[in-house]
Amino acid sequence: MSICSVCKKEYSNKYNLLRHQETTCKKIKKEVVHQCINCNKVLCSKQSLSLHLKKCKNINYNFQQINNEIKEIKKELSKNNQVQNITINNNNTNNTLNQTNHNYGSILSLSKEVIKETFEKNYTLEDFFGSQKGLADFTNKHFLRGKDNPLYLCTDKSRQKFVYTDEQQQETEDVNAEIMIKLMAKGFMKMKQLYDEEDSILQKRLKQFVKDDDMTNIVETRNQIKTLEDTYKQLLTIFKNGDKYRIQLSKVLPSSVENRLINDEQLKLASDDETYVTNELDRISKNKEKTNNNEFLSEPEHLDKPLYDKTARHIGGITYGGLRMLKNHYIKTGEKLYHAKHKNQHLFMKQFDEFCENDE
Image (cartoon, rainbow, N blue to C red; front, side, top):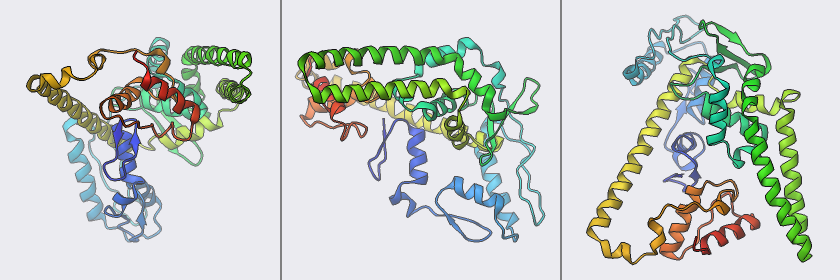
């Protein structure tokens, strides 16, 4: 879990945190100004500035400054030798990046086995309840990001024009994202598995609430069952009506090879930072254990054991690791912290309370 040092908001990974700090964090936005070099208009983020530059009506371009910015991008990416011959078309109507070389593969190379395995390992109830939007985010995160994943772009976000490279590296349009949807359908068995498991849990609860004549929980559980069913139906109808999937996919995909290269470089840097922090925490923990053994022995014995509490894996879609961190904090300090997704959700808060109090 990554926490913004400025506004203290929590994010599931370092990449989302960096994006938040660059676009929405109000305190940081006061310090960072994204201003158009042509018309001096101030934009809210680098991405907004990049989109604005492509259609800025002020034709008095500062080509020297643009070239300097491109040189900085090339310098950052030169370690991977991914970008070559980035040039500027020096006229009064265009400023484009072209002749970009890349080693990305084709989505047609994604095998059924790889897709099923990826869904099996990574697709969660949180993704499931995100419905078509959640599936679009999952598609991008696990299949279309990083240097080892294939190239898939949305070159016209307003018209949702999706483009991929075929096996001969030729640009090809994926009309209405039909090919991508068919590929993702190979992982739908995981969706059914999650649906069946959650439905079984809810039906057992409902049966017990009916037996106890607990009308409040009967109504709430029936609503949860209906939400589960509606979400599953919307996912299954993606072939006939996948508008929400396409809209979300168009938002999260890069619009050009250059943007994909830059995004992947940022992703790599974020991953390296997260690995460094994790290693440092492990090192500090080991040193503390060696120098202050008595302190660790005084803490509850089960803190150092790997735990697999199956009852906690689906609390509001939060991963076991995130729940474990919050429980460790409670055990050490006596202060109970609820995840942002649990606040004002009384059922999730109750389940988390039980998770904190049990001895496992």
